[in-house]
Length: 278
Image (cartoon, rainbow, N blue to C red; front, top):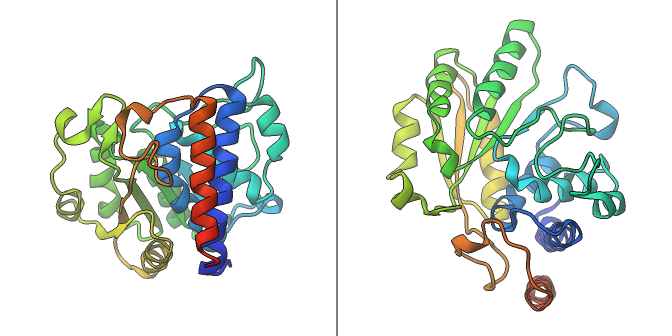
């Protein structure tokens, strides 16, 4: 378990690692990386029961990154947790023949499923959670989705199924940054209140500021305590969180920073980290 103070500092180093991976591979989904990386960090540090030594343990917790394009953030967290080597990822990310591609690859340690074709993660996670119930195992399953992804019909088929099977061992998280590759989610496919929608399907709904470490930590804890129904965390995030260079800008959904932008972004991360010591 990591303390809140430790996590508040770690979040900025992980962001630097993530941006360095993107720069090394000459591309990546940097905006969504920055919005979801805090939730990934909190989950892996304080709640997900899996280590590099237990990747084949049938009782390990499962995690599915359904918004698979946020892979650079996932690489940074997997490296921090010892599943992968950061220098190796930086050296080979997005290179021909490399296993370090732009979406999850389950040939790598700690990754449960290939994803990136949006809308598939929740149905697969439901299968994992249902299997735990049928096998009498106590592992939990977590799945992270993007809000643009919620236009996929398979998400809502899954949303109906999980409460039907009373999958209280399932926790979904929606990265609600309100932007996608083609603009604002409300302009592309209006979503209104995600809280009301998921509640109507029978889920336990927790709505939190999605880049707030304390709120995320508490939400994952509450999800684990909920009985009789699955939980969805609506994480109200900021796309590109951490630097004004990229915050709340749809054009940064997939963008390779220039050297000038890179320097400014890293300086902003450093300033946020140093402010913790003031």
